[in-house]
Image (cartoon, rainbow, N blue to C red; front, side):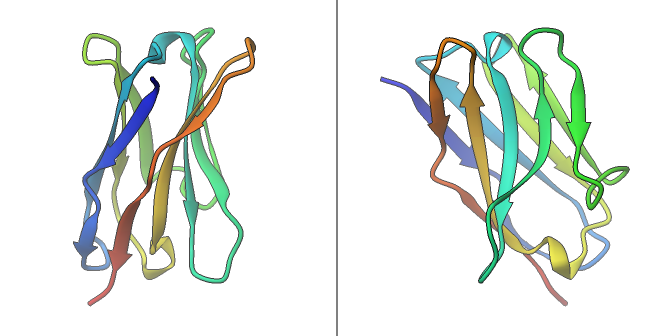
Length: 117
């Protein structure tokens, strides 16, 4: 059974930092395209960062480029999202996703991030 469990969300002031984690079981993160998505109230879910299972290459949405960093820990079979210089518009539920060319596609349950003073 595949599980993706996010953690690390919470309330932070503008300009602050948070680190989200996504622990995977039932799949191997180094052989999956792992990504972080977010969904703000009233908005569609959007992808913000991805790390390739093929070569470890990373890509970011323009809205988070330079502030967020996605990383992978193969030994712990998990990925993380370091979020710096957070802004109120970063407030959303953040989701971890795992996909691969073999056809699997799994989501975590999400973790709330609220940026407010």
